[in-house]
Image (cartoon, rainbow, N blue to C red; front, side):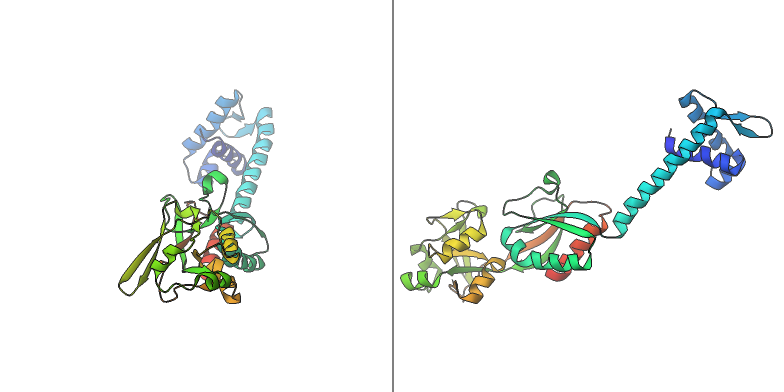
Length: 293
């Protein structure tokens, strides 16, 4: 028995005055009205209605139970209204995760604009270069760099990130500027641990391709730390433009091999596959795609 439905039928019967009137109001048969009420009586072990050939009157237990049913049904309607409001108007806390550099330089300004447009939403932004499990760690959505690997997630593409090889001006003055990717093999190359211990940089120019294995004196799992090492003259790094753009613009680092291309990296905003995502999640993902897609 659907107890809430049975309560609804019981209240409708009293308000309508008869089984037939309640059946018409609820678009069910009078027989079904009787079944719902008898099921309630069986579960409670007490009569709710005194039945005669002409009318039905509430028993003492029925009258008390009726008021409680009204309270319960009112609470359900209130709860449904709250849920619907949360789906209709962006509000509440949104937990978002993103890679450190992308989150700090690209996503944060967009979040600021989103919050200005949706003042009832609060965003908790977690910046982390490791692969975060959205469901396990309680995140609503996240930005992922690289090809999405988890087919359970709904992924929407953002603009791809360009990759650059850079070093500090002092490093270039000390070691010279490489003319060809093979010249990098004689220099200290700093690795990004998230790409694996045996990764290589792939440079292309026209139909020519050059692979440069990265086996330098330092590897780290954090792009900001990698940039700090490059600024200190430790070696050459390859990172994406969200991290490098400010340092390139200020001259703190210089681009090496500008006539060669490195592969761009895919970027997506991902979320769990909810059939009806909340208004805050739906509006945030749409906003980010519009601004960064």
